[in-house]
Length: 185
Image (cartoon, one colour):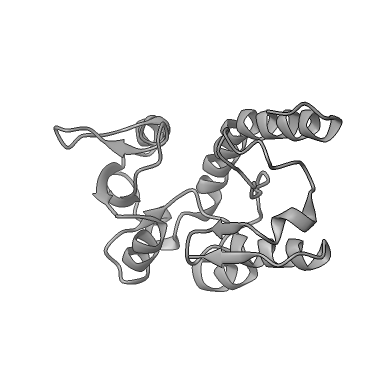
């Protein structure tokens, strides 16, 4: 990778983003406490709560024997120690699939979930706890990318998960910095 001042800053920020991801996910789970659907909170001890889970390395995944494992599972188990709830993990293909399951009553809970004005109306979030953000990431072998090289960014293909507010945030970011983001959902 060619070493320029811009490259060094890009690498610094990219590493910082990876380090902060764990902290952000923790804040997301803290926010989870604040966004449990009303029917789950009112259910009391012994309630079986169906949790939507999609592969998210380190946070939630299914082992070959079908057991759900990861940080999220450990966190919910701590909540279960206090509430007496039982969690049933329902496998989803991705975030969009899990949102569909939530909207159609297949699951009771989905996290982490980003707060938006539309979701506050539909899902009844309480006051937000923590912060969330999106990050622009590239493969390590892309030595042609330099931090804030907006002219070059117009030539890139961007990928984003459907039904997330990050798509709109990327479009706004691109508009504010004078490049076009060709986004594939």
